[in-house]
Length: 255
Ligand code: PEP
Image 1 (cartoon, rainbow, N blue to C red):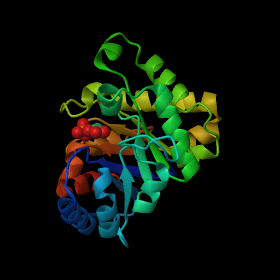
Image 2 (spheres, rainbow, N blue to C red):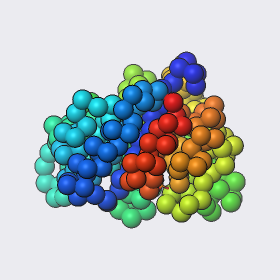
Image 3 (cartoon, rainbow, N blue to C red):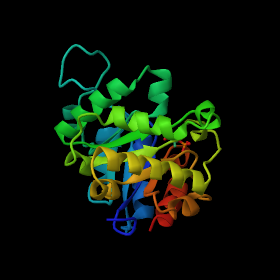
């Protein structure tokens, strides 16, 4: 398998935006725009309380719904947390795990990212696993080491078979929500580094089959050149996913 056969995945990360009523309107508008664009998988990862509304609005369309986090326990005394079974029943098929905002503001570690990943896969969710370096790490020329370490720790105990349900999002932390974007060459090199770690962990066939997205201020103006790179199989999009026309332009660039 190679870029020609890996399906691109364009996923929106709404973060903490949109009430249920706003969700209905935004999903319906996005669905009308991306209708018939079947050259990539399209996912919207919405706040927990919006999942049911989003899933109902996306029913019968080519949009799939995801969540932005999941707890690793099946149930229990974990106030404020949400289990994989709850997400599935509410209508989510995907879940983002290890987003840098969770690592930065909510104490998420590679250990809990790994626990969440295994729980989500065991329950039948598809995982969008985020890894990426901070600016100081890039400036110190240790990006590859950081990506390798995160990928290995976050995927510890995840089987080769389970990798068919894992998407990796390379998200340089310095590019998220900042308007700064990695160059296509930087994005390709980092996604290629992650792919070579997957070859070490699994085998070349598995590594070549995994979708690796770029995320970090991807927008309607820069998506085409980023998505043209060999190792970049799609995008995880924050800000631009909140504007249906901009998200649609990125989906169009991925066709
Ligand atoms: C993100 O939240 O994963 C992201 C990439 O955000 P933005 O596109 O706004 O940089």
